[in-house]
Structures are given as C-alpha cells and as structure tokens.
Length: 443
Ligand SMILES: Cc1ncc(COP(=O)(O)O)c(C=O)c1O
Picture 1 (cartoon, protein in one colour):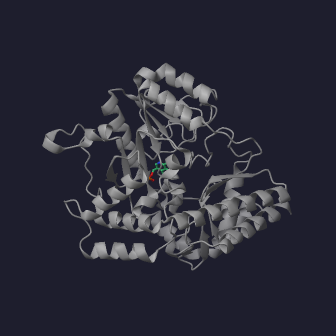
Picture 2: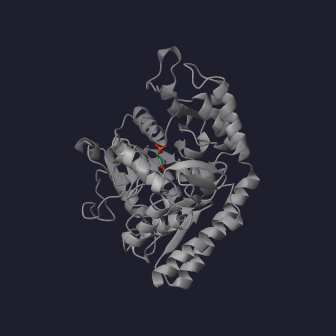
Picture 3: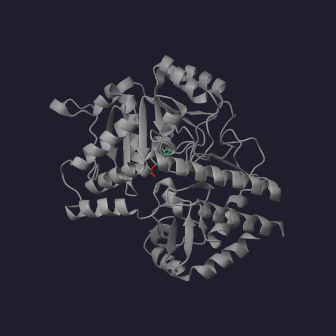
C-alpha cells in the first residue's frame, strides 16, 4: 500500500486529532514540544491509557507497544502506581526539602544494582547523562568523552553527536568522525567527543588507546536501544570494561532503556560492573525522572557536606515526591515472575516476526533482548548503526503508519517493547497486524 493511501486512512480515523493539531500549530512551532513524538501529517492526541491499551481523542483504541518510549513497563495507569501518586499528591506536589520516598527509591536502586553505591535523582535521562559526564570530568580531570555512533543519550550538546549521522559526513566505519546531531551545537563540542563503532572491539581499542590520556568517560548504552536494539557481540562489553580500566577512563552504562531487561539492568544480564550508571524511564513509574549513580568515590564529587561539593547539582523538581513514590511502587511491583512474563512475551513476539518475515519473503529482521524489540528493514548482517540503515528509508514510516491504522502503536524507528499488562493474545494481535501490512504490500 502506498504511503499516501495509508495517510488518507489515518486522517479519516483521526479528525479530532487534526483539529487539535490545527490549534497547536498556532501556538507552538509545528504544534509540538517533543520532536520524537511528531510525525506527518500530525500525531494522534492521547486521551487515556489503561493496561496495554491507549485511546486517542477520536476514541480509537490501540495496543501500545511504544509504552512512552519503553517507560511504562507495567502498562498504563497500573492501580498500585496510581494510588502511590494520588497519596503523594494529596500531601503536596513538591517541597524545598527531601522526602522519605527519595531515600526509599535510592535504597531499592542501590540494592538492585551493586555497582551503584550511591545515586542522585534528576528529571530526565538527559540530565542523568549530563551529570554523569560532568562527574567523570571532575573526577578524572580530563575533558573528552567517547560515545558510540548511533547511540542516543538525550538532548544535551555533549551527547547529541553522531546519533543518526549522514554517512557522507561520518568518515570511515573503523574511525567515525563526530557529526553534530542538531543545529546549534558549537564546533568546540565536536573536538571533545570521540566516536566509536559499535561491536568492533579492535577499532574501539585503537581509538581509545590513542585518546586515552584525555578521555574522562566512555558512555555506553549496552543495548544500543534507540539505535535499533543491537545487542553487544559476545565479549564486546567485557573488552570495553578492560580497556577503560587500563586507561583510567570511567565507563558509564546508560541504562535509561536497558534497565528494564533484568532486575539489575543490562549490567546484571551481561555481568559487567560499570563505574557509573544512568537511569530514567521505568524508575519513575511514568513520571519525569532521571538518575545517575555508581562508585562512591566518584559520586563523592556531589557531596555537599561541609561545603565540600565539587559539583553543585540543583534542580527544582529533583527527587520530587510524586515521581519517587511512583518509582518505588513500580519497582516493588517488578517481582521475578513479572520479568519472566516480559521475557516470554518478547520471545514470542520476536520468533513470530521472524517466521512472518520468512514466510512473506520480506527483507526484514527483528532484534531484541527481553521485552525490547526492534524491526529492521534490511538484509544486511546487523552489527552497528551503519549496517542497520534501512535499504528503503520509507519502509519504517509505512510500517509505523500502517500499524497505527491496524490499531497498534510502535515507535517510528521500529523500536518497541512489551509491558507486564500484555498477554500472549496481545502479542498475537501485533503479529496479525504486521502480517496484514506485509501481505497488503505484496499485492
Ligand atoms: C539510552 C538513553 N539515554 C538517555 C535518554 C534521554 O532520556 P530523556 O528522554 O528522559 O531525557 C534516552 C531517551 O530515550 C535513552 O534512550
């Protein structure tokens, strides 16, 4: 089916969303405050969510495999989290003082993640990576940071580099050049960010050794989540851990997405102990959140006692009681049985998609770990950002929009996740919807 026809179907289903968007563009650039959620011709406007489902303002129901970009691990409006938020809100939305909820969430996180000996809270994953990078610089006295091509770590200048670079500007695969990921990033930033190729340990080692003396940190999303959920090759993370330890570079695991794959995150799953960890998404139970933590000696740069703090980390809404209470309720609900459920749903979805692609002879693949998955529209062997580029850039858009019309919400790049609220029947409905699109395309 052509994109034009898919868009016509979408517009026919969503007149109220179109009307809201018409109002929105008069008061916001593009009618929008979150570029990620925008798509042409206009996004649907959400009215409510319950469990695995989300309804838009036109009353269209969709199965939600987006989960606010993997944040809603329990699904929409889980009763225990709603109750915790309501109880906290009734006592006051925020205070110029810490609360017990903050201490409780910090205790839970430090128990679940042994490498996190101390933790601090912020309001987004962006703030988490910003502060972790600053801490690494303050601790090591070095200024450069390294990151992977294709990896997303939020929207501050230091990490908006080589996220989805145009390959014409990005240099060779083994020595990628830093490419600004946005207008407005000063050229000076690019001089301080070193870019590495994912899953190529030899090339990474060469670059890290060359820059070793000046590198404060290596920032690693252990699953390259937004970059397509491309799991690390066996031994790759271990090798990075060894090289960074040898060179005195702090390794920061950005587990904003990957924390959902085990009670202690991807670092538990892969058996690696990073120096610092950044968190977000699921740990706030659906409310705005970020956290960064790790080695006590590194985190001590934030310790304000006796006026000693080397980094002042403020934030009007840091560790606000609503978010902290929602985070505690969410993590307490995530008992081992629920991780097993998520794992089984993820497996069912991935094996179902693989069978479907084989049967329909479509040049696609599905990757993933645990409850996370990503659809790819290329036949290449998937290892890194470059190999995961779709052969036809229009294909992810057609699939995303096609699924929307079939009552299934994914992300535009094909990343998706299962939630605790889902059943096997929900996964099967996803497969049926995808099958409908692939079959239609063959006609
Ligand atoms: C790995 C990773 N780090 C950081 C972020 C930024 O988090 P936030 O959107 O809360 O700023 C994201 C967001 O998707 C992410 O996937």
